[in-house]
Length: 281
Figure 1 (cartoon, rainbow, N blue to C red):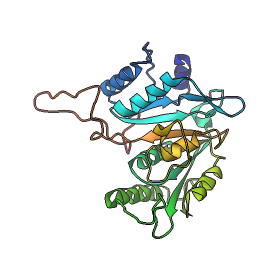
Figure 2: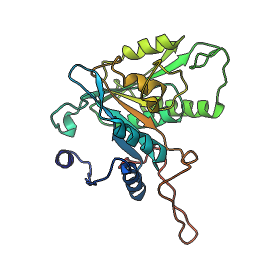
Figure 3: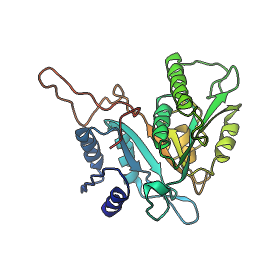
């Protein structure tokens, strides 16, 4: 793995600092989160605890790996991405100039979706990345939870609109016409599922972990991926599209941090902000 990162560093203009740590599965999350805090990173990327078999089905690596991901999500001092890898990037290393991928962000709203879109926009700065944003919109009088009553968080809605406006304005110059924005009206859960299945031609899905919609699968053993991520990671969805499920860092929700910030000379440094200008490390 270290050799692969070193090869990537030599082929790209990205600075890579590999580090190997030997940890027990019971406390590996402590090493991950402590290292992230010390290096002040913007996002932790961890692999999904299942891998894809040759027949396309997803097979678990074990309950212990599953618990590691849950603990990282709970204790992380920054944003977290869980990668469901279905062969993203292929088996051969290519130079940065030869990269060519299609990425889609199914946007339902909320802080996690905004974080996913922010990283999608960063990826789309590369000329070889095609980025599409599909915003799911409920029918009038309903929410994306398809309730009869609509209770909308006005602050969240305003931030969603601001984020989408930023994306549209950034790609309004037509210099890269492949980056598209589309709104899709949906009446029920079945229409959301059908719409997502129709997008399986993409190489990578970027989706928020906890988004304001109903669970798209009736039963899942991976509820930590959220209502949309758990469906995209299931065997019934796709055999080719990889998925990155993103959780935005929320300092108010991290009630039990593994690393406490210390104040020196009356000043306390803050944890990384969201990625709108903070490079992931």
